[in-house]
Image 1 (cartoon, one colour):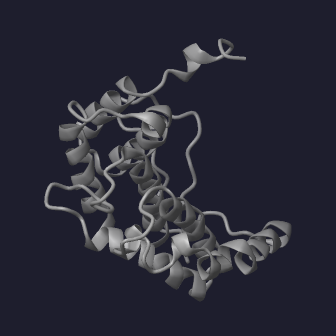
Image 2: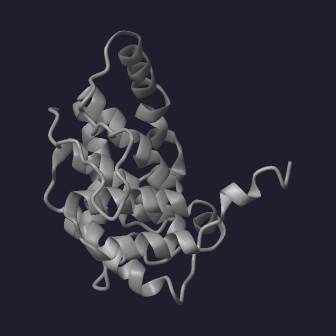
Length: 211
């Protein structure tokens, strides 16, 4: 895996970033870090699908009728960067099936993920998965799917607001909206980011009140 994407500074009207995030692949693991990643690959991440039923072929994020909430996306969120940082063909193949199903099965309205569960939260995680995968591969399918889903969010959020984990973790979604905006320049993404923030828990105001 090579270093494919240029560094992306914030586009106006966003404030210039004090630091620029390095895309996946810009730094290659060596020494102790490479050894730790290999331990993870040879351990839990490399074998979890073999014994945990929720991550088997019937997971709803693979098109099945099984678990369809956050477990598949969370697993893929660790698997994708691990696979490409190690350039491990087996892990890349395992990661690919999670990504491929999402990219191959968007709904006509732009929605992604299992139809049986429309919770915003697991899709926030899957956006991170798609972002990591795009940085590693530049797969041309990724950005159109993310753009269409973002347009769907902008239309749907006024009536179907963020709740529960989506309300608590909306900033995770904003992170990927900002990433997508800086890559594409699609101006509606700024409106979407502001809408998500307006429905997200104000963590700054909560600090110190519940301790």
